[in-house]
Length: 444
Image (cartoon, rainbow, N blue to C red):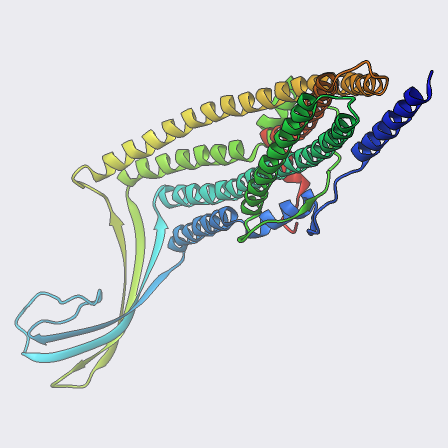
């Protein structure tokens, strides 16, 4: 081996060492605040307007329950009544019949107490209906918390995935830039043609374009994460890997049974079904009598003589005789709501089971895809090392090296997307089974 050949070998070896070391160096993270998955979810549970709306709906239902319950207590109201001429106020503080009384002016001040005694369970069933509706709103709040957690996790994993793709794109640009410098040096020494240098320059531009696109996609992903957290303004974070990749799952049948027992949406609709049943009974019992006791007291002042205190007490039995079809229509409405809620519950059970099955099978497929992608990365790296060695020995071409580097980039991208897809599938499965919301308390 002559001296010129040895010098060329040493030059190629040094150039390839520079290329390898440049590839191994990692990308510098932007100086942005670090954000964990737990912190992102805590922010969403505190700030997202979806949960504010759910809390207000719950308070609204609780207030309606209190309104229905108030009928069980005495209803007291003050009255000021004035008459003129021969009319007089009676014990109900209404103007009595005009009889032969001296014309005079009368002012009556007093109070009426009205107490419901018995109405065949109409009021109690209405109260039960309102109470169950309020309880269903509590489950709706839990369901909205679970949905908020899911959307935050999906946004977090999407941003994390895009951040990792930016790192891969940066590494690709560095490696292809080093290849271009190597080819330019070889071209200056007459070891490579200008066509090889042009091809290497094109690959650098392609890598730079992919990096720009990856950075733009990362900005969009971080904005979506910011929105999922219930925050305004721009989102700029350094995300932490949650490290929840390898989780052992139960069987599909067990997960579906778990979802049927603890999914808050199912519990909410079940409460609404019981509420509609109570509302139907309450509507049907409007046809039965109601018994009330009333008492009144007051003082009447006449224009022609001194006023005096008086009181009255009486009972009232009220029986609806004709309401223009109002009661019958309310009964039909309550029955229709009940049947609609039954159908809604059956449909939701099927939808929940489908969500569990979809998330479960997606997770299983992605786990297998991760295994294949890991093998692809290992194979692609071996091919890249071989292409580098062949170029060092003068046996390979720039096209061969570039193709090997592209294969590594594609394999690493597939592995990154698959791994983050597994995390997203786990989040979807936790939401589908109703277990995701239990990982975070109301305080969190």
